[in-house]
Length: 138
Image (cartoon, rainbow, N blue to C red; front, side, top):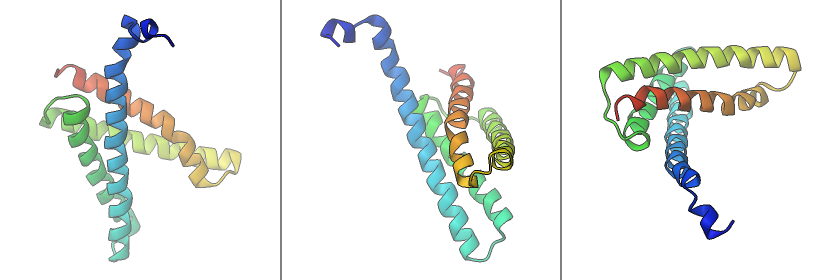
């Protein structure tokens, strides 16, 4: 690409979007670490796996919310957006769990492979939802 191509107004508009997307990815990754780490610790100390998953998932969703509201979308945390965010993510978890079950049953692939297939789609859906939710606040 030439310098003039890099300075094209349409390309320059993509820079903030790319930064937001990268920031959202980092926030989501932090949530994943909290989710997996919290789940492992809770199970290790004897908490039932289902309860452990609920606790670690809720903690993860909360961490992601706090990170993306501030660092990705530059808005403050608010009770109404928190409730909407938790409702969306909870629904997303249920929907993609069903998709994973269906993929395993239909393809015979290992569950982890099916889960990994859903990650890009769920990530894009979660980013789009968050962008719409927080756009009104900026």
